Image (cartoon, rainbow, N blue to C red; front, side, top):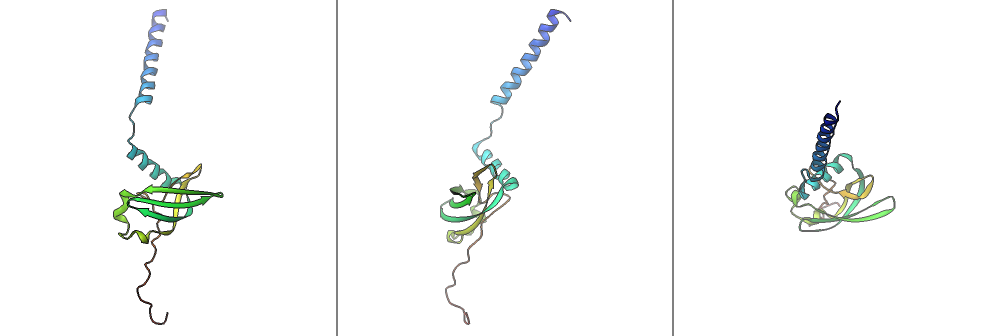
Length: 133
């Protein structure tokens, strides 16, 4: 192989590596909504389940808390995409629930996603006491 051929091959390989590096660095960026959807999908498929307590709901923001390995977490999740799947009375959501969290990062959790929900609806209190009860 001549020196010119070797230089051409090295130059071509360098150009290919430079183009690949540029694609990896600048390539297609996911929008924040796509990143959040991917996070929910990952946790739905691979997350561990734990008990939680839904403590508050304000608009489309749901607040819940849970404990993993002795550490208490207080989290909010935007459930705006799922409001049509939930009851219109937010008080029915308050109370015990289940969450899925990432085993390596317990602070990364979800209460509801496209594929899974840990919401347990509370029963509304009866208006009148039933006979014999």
